[in-house]
Length: 224
Image (tube, rainbow, N blue to C red; front, side, top):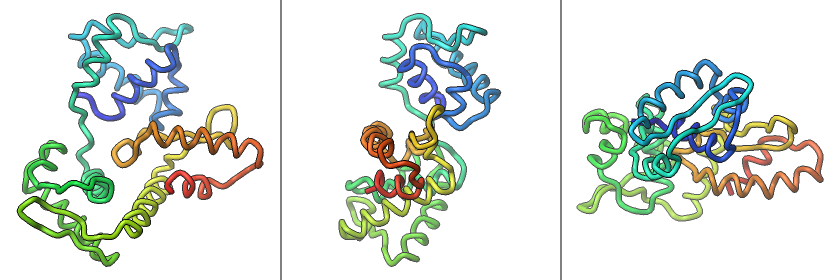
């Protein structure tokens, strides 16, 4: 089973066709040693597809073999989200903000590959975080939902994204221009990365005519 970083490594190499450890390290915010370790794991997982990631000195990193089979595998594959307490709390918290449907404890536990009791423990902390801000998770026969109006929901979304970027350094400079920004892969659990990149593309055009601009300004624009 792939985790989100490994999935993003595959997709980045596929999009670039040929890349380098330096580019992968910048994109994922992981060391080159960690990238190499993850590529080895990826190749073990995707072996049945007939595709393989090839890292060759002086030739870069690229995918060889049955690309279509690999892409079909990625569409169907379950992706391991992360299993630290912090990752679970962020995931559950963001689900209540970004998902308008009712949430159920067992379904969340299945998504995170943890026991029901472990999920309920993380849920206690999520409830506490919402309560501190004046919001409550309600239970019904349909499941759990956050009692909140749309304006407050959007404000909490912005706070969450800003908090995550500020603490994880997830808005990163492109290699050739400190003012050209991209979205690092850690945000995949709480934000539609492709939508964020489209927004950033527009903002980057704006930034190129504006001069140096703080990351805080850009984070706020993308979040809204």
